[in-house]
Amino acid sequence: MNTPIIETDRLLLRPFCEQDTENVFACWESDPDVAKYMFWCSHNDINKTKEWISFETEQIPSDKWFRWAVIIKSTNTLIGTGLVYFEEEYNLFEVGYNLGKEYWGYGYATEAMKAVVEYAKNIPGVKELVGRYAKENPASGNVLKKLGFVYCREIPYEANEGNVYYEGVECKLSLT
Image 1: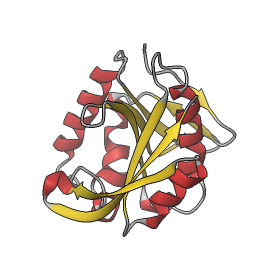
Image 2 (image 1 turned 180 degrees about the vertical axis):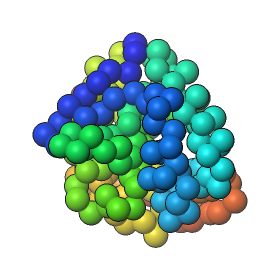
Image 3 (image 1 turned 90 degrees about the vertical axis):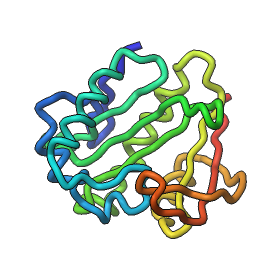
């Protein structure tokens, strides 16, 4: 299953391509504020972003990894990413998302992830999704709540490649 192109009212979600590297680096990968609660560390070198883009483009035909570049349709501006992927730790598909800081607070993450959740309903065998967030990042929790995810339990939350730990929350969404 190739990662498809998806449209919402304001957004276009499409697979990443090599030409996105500079925009990705400038918009969020080089920003420690965006990476603060993410599993990855911010990039201080565009070559790390090139490696990331290369990994993402290799995943396009995967049936267990679907990542989209989130684009504002009216301006053709790349603002972030949305993801649904198979997480072996949970034996479930998990959602993830992040936007460049300048695009926080406009409902883009919720709009993009509603489309991603709809897509996940078509992945064979997927009946439930998991989402996790750091308690210190309630905006991410609000996105999950708006998508219909429900609280399951508190968990340790690992960020920045295991260099930082927070108190976290695990939520699940039934797709049936």
